[in-house]
Length: 109
Length: 114
Image (tube, rainbow over all chains, first blue to last red):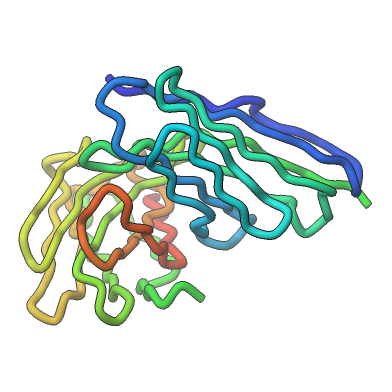
């Protein structure tokens, strides 16, 4: 059974803090890793799709790195804002997306 | 707005009943995926259709079935409903079926089985 683990489960930070989360996935038979942002009462929104070892992607203040050999990806948020409050999901792609349970981020003003 | 539409938004029904959830993908997308989000569980993949053909299956119960029609919309049929089927059901679509294809999620259908 393929398992995708995310840590921490939840995170509370102050506005302006930088933060990062981890996604761990099986390192064998890697195809792609997806990151999603899921705000309460909305639907998951795609952030990044990562495929190559050493990949780094950036979107505004959010960036992600990928290490396929050791099976992990980091998501970084620089200078967190209250609007960054959401659950951040990673998903490992085999012939289907296997989602982690997410990191719930709350940013306090 | 992702461009993926799902109807209905909410559905309340009784145990033993049958319901149909509908999904229209983004314009031009050929793949449709169905996911279930139960209480305290992550998003669970149910099934994937590409251009009318079933492409991959997750832990979908035998009581559940899906299809994708020639106009590419998809329906998820849930029958002999049980209390445990209460969940948020998402549909997602992507342009193709590749591992790197971004999936765009619809707003979801919240199913409550009483």
